[in-house]
Image: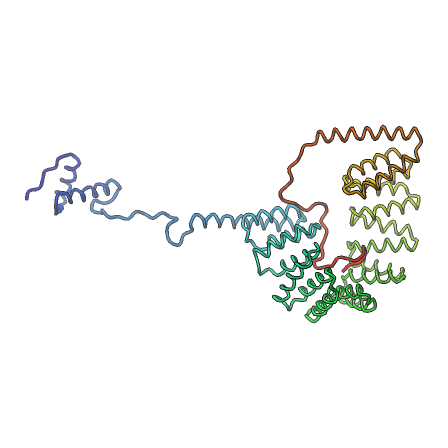
Length: 461
């Protein structure tokens, strides 16, 4: 059968190409037309004329073994989280605790499962005295890393500090079941049980801890605390002395032993104990506080004033210690020192009602009554509770009752001017949205993990 002549230019091009190759396409003309069309498409795509069934290159992300787009995004987030975490470590080493918390928080947001970030954040919150925020961070760490038993222990201790003793005991009992050979876990459980009013169980836990090596001064000190709390002072003294002998840096046991001496009336021995504790740890506030109080009881006011000044350098926010220091220096006739101490309190916290009241007392002692009245008005305005407000109002009332008529008129004018200024300030104030993330405020304080709260201002566990 004779081949049909091409009808158009494109068909003619294919026809003559086939004739030159010497390999005519067999079969029906309709099938040939289909195959010719495929050859045309292959030619236009850059393929060889006879290569009509050629597989195109696969998309890179669809090749087996390569990551999907979702995996790539997740890997980037994990890498970003790691960078934030490492930034937090550097900031923490530099002492920039608030910035370190921000970095750790960013790390957790990028990768909620990242290890250690929540735990380190909780430790920093503890150092700042923000126990509730610390508990949240430890709980998040335990949820993300169930194997982090240290975070679980800190979570239990934090709950106990918040007064949530049942939850604390439940978690710490679970911890001792998972790691019964760790004495620190039994010590933490004893702390929670002591807080819950279970001294016998706490004593049993501490004696269990002492059977597990190594024996520590902290365990001996805590056992002494439990014994003293249950009226066994002689046995408590033995445990405190053992703790002091075990660790040359143990200062808490020195404080607790000095507390027993002070309670028994041996003030000189108590003073020696507090000073030994301060020698071992110069930053231990209960040691310096105990020294200052005993010196006052001994009537050694110059030394007591110096001790209170050391205490205020360690804890400038202790308004009661500042009030006592001001009174001591007023008794010594050192009104200038008393006034400077009072001003330091206001500089430390300008919005403290109590600090303003102390400054008013110091000003009144120097005869500066109008200035004293102004500080007490500020104290009333800044008071956060009824007690502080009533205290400042009573000081104002006493001052006004003892004033002359002309001074009362000056007080009234000052009070009116003060209220007008407050009204103007309120009108100018612009509301600021509350931050969604709380950060540690004020100077960071070193926290001792597992140290129970003291029953008095000078006891240390």
